[in-house]
Every structure is written in structure tokens, then in C-alpha cells.
Image (tube, rainbow, N blue to C red; front, side, top):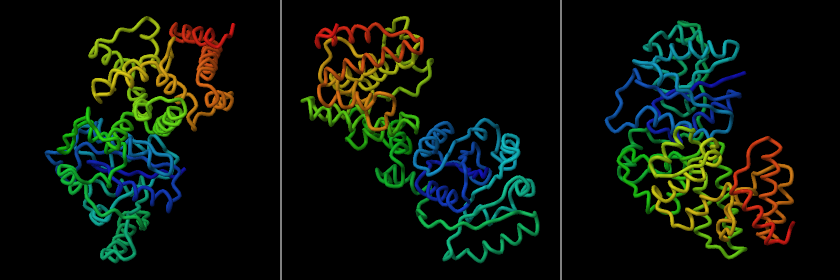
Length: 398
């Protein structure tokens, strides 16, 4: 297996980094990319406006959603004290993947200065070197000479890669642009949303009064990358159902885009939010993350993003349902269930039923949920059972 190792400060990670990584993945036919934010870069001093190490890590994770191959972000340099030497990192990676082919990716400046790095001979033994250089690059001859020198001096295996979609901006320039309210186009949507939520690089967004575009970016930044497709699908489906059944379309979109805003949080983080916002949980809710994220997500939608009571309520009930649901609440419950990326036995029947009759769709969805939970031996929350009974009575089902 070929694994590309791409380290850097990533302060912030931007489309230039991703274009280079994608080019390497294609030209080297990589099976996997590994991004490694450094803790204390040995070759430069971090700016006073830099994001914290954990924030740079978080942004790198979000950025993997836009990479064309399998990708992960490792925090091993952030876990080490002192300067982040590449030789130490490659030793750790070689222990993790002793049989795999490691490729170290780097830019022109780093490649040309490679012989000055800490333990270049160790790096050359543990990984092949791949440097980005366009054929028209004024440093091309110098890069080719460096290839020969490194091969002769360290026995290094070197390759020059073309970067056809080079993005001409540095992280320093981007941080300055963000301070001035510019630079969004150089960032993926979730990364930009993360910067807005955390107020990084001098941004001062009012999270309770975001534009639609910025609210979407902020919402996506709350998710694990693999969840983004689902949330976008839920928001789009919610608008379709709202239009069909007379619910407010903008409220449906807002609830759809925010419904999973606390989904990725662990149990201790969920409980901390409950304490912060004075949220009471019953015994089953205290044990089930799936139940908690609807409750905490509603609170965050209200307190952080300033959503209306109807949007907050739709998020609150999107997991369990309840008796006497509003049209908007039903729309969000079902949009979450049937959005296009959902694929499970019975989903097509559920979709058809939902688009024929919203209440019959609710009853079917609740029955499917209860059946699934019972098959897994998991307890069903009383709100779901009461909702099922209410819709069954309404539909005249015994």
C-alpha cells in the first residue's frame, strides 16, 4: 500500500494544500493520504495570530472531506513536546506501517533545503521523497539538481510532481485576508465555518445573525466529514417536503442544516452542554448519544445560532418524534430519515409513503424505528412509543 505523508503547520489548511495533496494522490497512485499538523515547526516561528494546535488539527480533519482518496489526520506531532522533527514522525509511522511504502510530500522550498533538515539520512531511509514542481517553474533545474544530489548523498528515492491546480496564496497571506473579511474562496466550506465559529484570525462573526451561506458553513464545521453529505441531503429534502406540505421553507432548511450540530460530541461533551444550558435528561437519554444530540442540538441552535422556537422544536424532536407534531417537526423527522444518501431495507417504500401522505409517512417511519430498535435489543424511548400510538390512532390503525 502506498501512503502519502503530508505535514505542515496548516494555519489554516487551504485549497492550495488540498490541490497539492490531490495531485500527489493521482500521480503517485496513493492508496491513502495522511495529514500531520506540526506542533512546533523547526523551520519557522508561529505567528501570534496562529490558531491553537487542536484548532489546526480540527480544520485539517474537516478538510479531508474534499480529498479524492482515503485520508486521515494524525495528531502524533501535537502529542510530542518540542520541535516537530520529520525523522521522529517517520520512525513512528514506520512502526505503525512497517510493510507499507511511505512517500513524504513537500513543496519546493522544503525540498531544496532538505539537506539542512534534522537527520535527512534517516528520513531518506524511511520514506521516498516527492516534491511539487511545475515544468515551467524557475526552480525546475535547481529541483532536478537537488534530486541528483539527494540520491547520491543519501540514497534517496525522489520524484518531482506536477501541481496543475496550484493555488497562489500562502497561509500568512490568507490569515491577513481573513482579518480583512476576505479569503473565503481559498478555504473549504467547513474550514471557513470553523474559523467563523471560533473567531480565528481576527474574524468577528455574529453567530446569531449569520447569512444563509455562513450559517451553512458554520453548521458543516460542527460535523465529522462523513456526515456532511447526510446533513446537506437532509436540508434539501426538508425544503422539498416543506414546499409540498406547507411548512415554512427557510425554517425547514435551517432545522435541516443544524439538526446534527452536536452529533459528533462524546458523552462527556453532551452532558457538559446539558449542564451549561440547564437541560434535564431522563435515565434512557443519559445513556443514549442518539437521544442526547437532538436535545443538545436544539439548545445550541437556540443559544449559539439564534434560531426561532419553531426551528429549535423541530431539531429537538427529529430523533424520537412526539404526539401532535407540527408540520415542520414532521418534515425534519422524515427528511432526516429519507434524504438521498440513506440506504436501508424499506427506505424506498418509506420515501414513497412520505411523498404521498406526511402522517402515514410518520407512522411508517416510527414503526420502522421501533422494529429496528427491538431487533437490536435496544430500549425504545417513551416519546417514540407515544408518537407511534398517536399517529396510529389518527390514521385509524389498531
